[in-house]
Image (cartoon, rainbow, N blue to C red; front, side, top):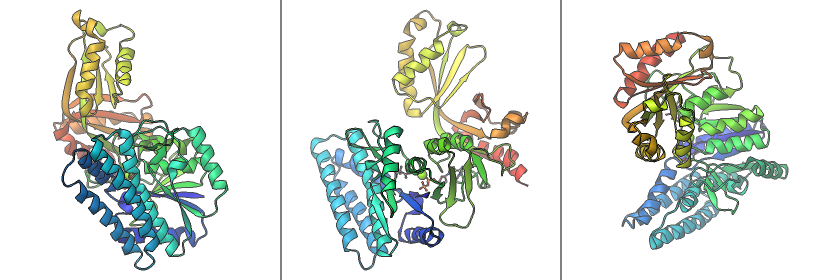
Length: 464
Ligand code: ADP
Ligand code: ASP
Ligand code: MG
C-alpha cells in the first residue's frame, strides 16, 4: 500500500483536480498499485473558514456573504467536475453546508467562538473537498470510499494543535484497513478527542495525517504531492535559484521544516521515521519528475549543507545578570515557567560566561514571556542578580541545515563570512549539539539578502 497526499495547492480548482485524478488513475490504479489518498481542503478554504467564523462572532454584516461565496465555490467545483451525475454530490454538500450554517448561526447568537468550535468549523474544509473528490472519482468509475479520519485518529483535547494518541489510533486504523478493499479517500488535518469532539492537528496537518495512516498500516511509501519539485534548497519565493534535493534524511527534513520550510509539516517525519517508511515529495504539475525522498540515511546528495530555511518574524527575549553565573537551576526555572505558560521556545542561545540566556519566541509571545519571567525571578531582580528582561523585535531566524556539517570543519566560518562581507549583523547564534543545523538571528530587514548570499556561497557554488 502507498499513501498519497494531495495538498490544497494541488486541489485549487477544477483543472487541478482533474490533473490529480489523472495522476491517480494513470500512475496507480491502472498499474494496479494499492493506494489510500489523503486530501487537504481546497486552496485557501481553511483560511476562509477561520474568517467566516470570526465574522459571525463579530456579527459583521458580510458574514452571510462570505458563507455564500464559500458555498458557491464548492458547488461550482462539484458541477465543473461532474457536468452530469451531480445530484448526489450536491445533495451531500448541501447537508454539510446546512450543518456549517447552523454552527455559524449559533456563534452569531451566543457571541462565543471557542477553539473547540473553531476546530469543528475548520473540519468542514477537508470534509467538503474529500466529499467532492470521492464522488467525482466514483462517477468516473474509479471506485473509492470517503473516510472521515476523525473516526480513526484519536487525540487529546488541545484544540487547534491536538496531540495524537498513537496507541489507540494505530489499532483503529490497522483494524479498519483489514476490513476494507476499496481505495479510501481520507480527510486530512482532523481527528477527534476522547469525548468525540473534532480536533485539528495544526495548520498544514494533512501531511501528518498521511504519515499517521502510513505508519499504522506499514505502507510501502508516503507520497506528499504539492506544487513544487520537492524539498528545495531554500524557499523558492525567497531565493530565486533554489533547486530540488534528491534526498534528505528524516532529521534534515524535520530541521528544515521546523525552521520554516512549509513544504512539509514538521511532525510528519516522526511516524514515518519510527517505521522506516520512505516519504517522497512530488510535484503534481510535473508528475514524472523524481522529487525528493526523505529516508533514514541520505546518500544521493553530496552536499554538506542541504538547505536553508527561515522563520521571518521572531522576537528575542534576553535574560541577563551577574547572579546567573554558576547558579544551578536558573535555566530550568526559566524554561519551566515558559512551558507552564505555553510559550513555545524556537531557539536558545547561552553565552559560555552564563551571564545571559537568549530565547527566540514568536512575536506575539514576547511580552507574555517577559511578564512571566519577571514574575518568576522577582526576588532575584530585587537583589539585582538579574536585570530587566529585554525583548527585541523585528527579527528573523535563518537555519542552515545539513547532516554532513559535523564532518566538515569551517562551515559556520563560511556562513559568518558571507554575512560579514555583506554587512549583515548577527544578533544571536545557536548550534544544536548534533551539528545538524546552525541557526542565526538577524534583523528582519536583512533576511532576503542573507538567505541569498548564504545560498549563493554555500549551495549554488557546490551545484556546479
Ligand atoms: P500544500 O498545499 O501542497 O500542502 P504548501 O503550500 O503547504 O503546499 O507547501 C508548499 C510550498 O512550500 C511551496 O509552494 C513553497 O512555496 C513552500 N516552501 C517553503 N520552503 C520550501 C522549500 N525549502 N522547499 C520547497 N518548498 C518550500
Ligand atoms: N487545510 C489545512 C490547512 O490549511 C491542512 C493542510 O492543508 O494541510 O492548514
Ligand atoms: Mg501544506
